[in-house]
Length: 340
Length: 166
Image (spheres, each protein chain N blue to C red):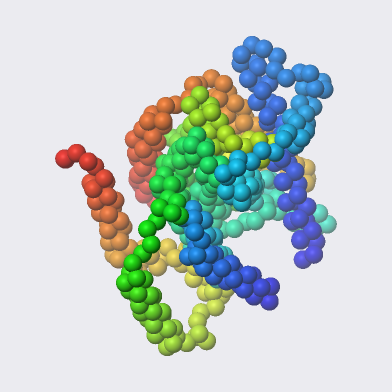
């Protein structure tokens, strides 16, 4: 019992540190990728290949002057970024990071909590994720910030529907709401993306909208709204908002890899006859590679596509994605019924 | 034993935020306190081993309905001074209505035998499988009818929201 508690604490700290480190270095990779796409070097002054750049940025954000608008709602103004960061870190609890470890004959799961409704837990977190942005945008008492917050909320509600509809097909195929079962079912090369290509595409697009990444970054659209919901934020509070976006990218990559790309499975990996702990480690690396791939796609699209107009965003969400997702559900249902 | 403390914590949180929702001056604060109440109630569901209900509660109430509330309140930007004070007869009627509700609740719970309640840990009544079986097997027709009712309400709302003639 005690060892399990110690192990879970260690695992939680490890996941926390990993999320923060990955988010930190995603900022550097993002700028390097942007440089590559625009045929320039990107940051390369701080340390070799600019490796110390995230550190320099962090220090800069910490030591910048705190500024709070006079007419702001003080408590909510501080609550906004804190809540965004808190919610961004919550999702990682149900992601299975790898197969079980075996130490001294005891098995230790690489998943924080194997709750039997894991997928719905992720939905719940996604659906409350907008609170931080809305609260922060409203509390700043600035019309641009308010517009950004209003945009964020309507965008997230619209895309949540299509997102949940695209996941329903996975639940129908697996017959379980637990993330562990969903990963276990994709062992070998039975990846869900091969059975649900349309569902994957819908989920990917919605994930872009839910993480406020370009081309769906309307809430912080700097050409129209100055800085969107974080216009009035400075110093580390702004840092929290920006940082939470990168954590969200990382976690949503992990969710997509788990749901559609087979999680930590790789064809033929389980037949190599590795010892359990080495196998767990290699599987974790496999999952991490898949997440990195999604991270790259996020950056690739950001530096390739222009931003949507707001009416285009709503039209895409309601008139294309939701009907397609419903169609996908119907087709999946018919196929499952015919195969019985 | 440990779950007792969590129960008291959640109950105090639910009651406190419910009262704060009523007394806070700014509409936005009221909305946020109501959201906090919903989270506390979701916590109670988890204590009753009804994880599915808890998560659905969070998704539907905190994630969808309260976000829409917040959205509307933000857009209207209600201020304290803009709200006209309610006339006295409205307050009296509201008070009487509240008393009636309290009376009904007391009537319901007075005859309720707490000892005979099922132990949620053994019956697993709140888990997805048992809930699904009840909804899609025992109460299939009421369930489907209520979904038709929702659809009607949605269509009606769209119809009322459209300005031009159809």
